[in-house]
Length: 261
Image 1: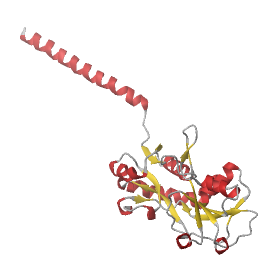
Image 2: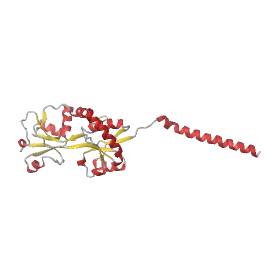
Image 3: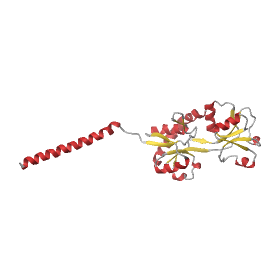
Image 4: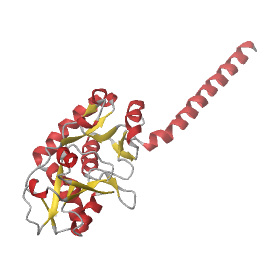
């Protein structure tokens, strides 16, 4: 009887063990059926956008030079790109906490650049003076004494001496488009704009009566992606793919899509 009971007990334990294994396997099957999930990179696009570098359309789809570059490269590296509109004062905190992975940024624009990892340059951002096509201006000096369209609340690092001395008179507007409309309406003689942003507006708004002053007023800065420090290895791979985009002409093609007439 003892022997029989022992055999029955062993059989029940074995059956229970098989049931647990089968149950665990069953629980795992849905996850296996779902397949491998791509890792995600969260890219900041800034509230209201930063066109033509990153912005969202009316359907909340992401666009822009830096977005397109990031999406193309990161997809090739096996990542999915999600966007988040994070106010500037919270960007670095979220990068450090891991809530955010990357943001468009020039090294010169960050007080704590050493705490983060930057990609190689993607596009140069520079200010330029837009003037009407029918105006005869060729130099900044010829604009002395005239009103210049500027961004409200913006502290410029170019033409500071001319503005401070009153040689150029600021006329503030809330956007580059507003400045260009002021220029077209002859309320100002020139507008100090982001050159790429203005070219994008020329294309989007069909503006044909505005050109840029031949004299350059700004050398500009190189716009990059600033990544969280824990993404250092990824940035190395990103830069390798970015150099390929540059050599192949694909980067120039992406930029032209947003800035050519």
